[in-house]
Length: 391
Image 1: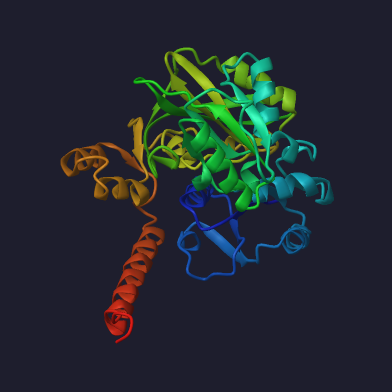
Image 2: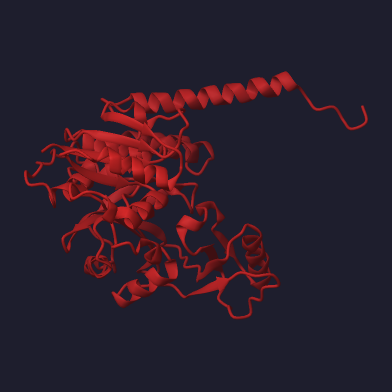
């Protein structure tokens, strides 16, 4: 019986890292892009065996996967977005016995609720900030909350955009922002105490779980994100421990969920404490950085089921720092970091976007970026300046 992986994703560097992690171990990769847009770069990786393009439509995607997996091969599913993860979890019993689908027994949407997940995290011994769920309505009042500064975010990531996360400093700002969330169609949001300090930084703990066993592959200490303060990891370091972070609490949390699959738990460290933010039931975006150190997370999960254990490739490098130069270069251009410092860090870090031996995806990405800029400039010059009104 053969072995194949199906990566269900959007066109993102997370997917590119996953494809490389699997392909470098000679595992055939079926790339299922949940978009019919052909202006994509992940599919240009030499490790992609075949590409399936589907609309962002759950019934179509599920039926296509059921049809695709009707062979004697063993299939391992890797959903890389909240949408894909929740979809697979809800339909995992519909797949054949030869399909290994990450799941929480159909309850993932429940555990994507940040208030519910924070409650369990606290029960498992993790630090959590004060918070409150706010149902949104017209003429909303905010007197029940008096902790400032505060952060307001979608209660369920799947229901909103990360860019909507907002910090407010008083009752007036909070009232105005809650009205804005209501105008955008939100029915509820989470209001939290905004934890901040001079020593603050973000943390990702990445691992996998199967058959009641939890494996932690790495702890990532973020140095920069893009966009700064609310984006994906762009420059970071893999560390062995964080003061105050007890890995056993995370293992207990995942075990209580009964989760099977890859996970990424986020924390914010401040004043000597790591505060639980959320758990993503999918591969974290910088997962390929672990592969570079010989800690191939998706293959580790496959080995929990596969009869013939796959021997992991040895580390490519001993570098613990890594950079997603696709996004971190924007931090340099926006002067979040000086050019000389950025170049030094770029030289000393592992790169997880443009990778030697698999350059086509990054070449495709940058060529599309340049062509798009040129088209916009050409249109602007063709249209010319807009004349003043009345002339």
